[in-house]
Amino acid sequence: DGTLTDSGEGIINCVIYALERFGLPYSTDMNAEGLYTAALSDKKRSGDTVNLVIPQQIGNCILQKTPVTQLKLLLESGL
Image (tube, rainbow, N blue to C red; front, side, top):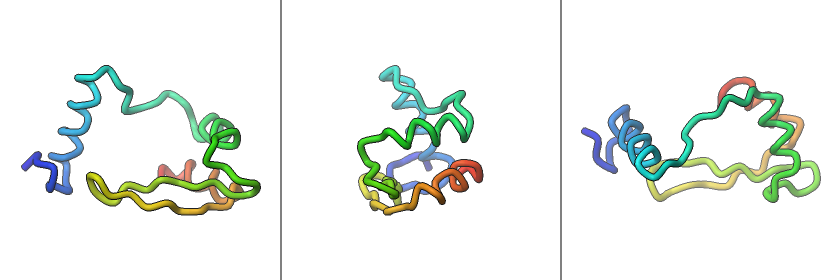
């Protein structure tokens, strides 16, 4: 239905619309290797792990500590 409680395509379109309206990006031309390289210097990295922010729903995210060795595989799989 496009409301903030909608977990389907409607909420995706709503978020994309809001990002576009404020001139913010919602996609990238970077490939998995480029994203991986950038993530290695990210402030959320601590030694051999990186803290991923995983959205669960609007306003609710979890932090997932992920070994950098698994990060590249996640990026390649599109997660």
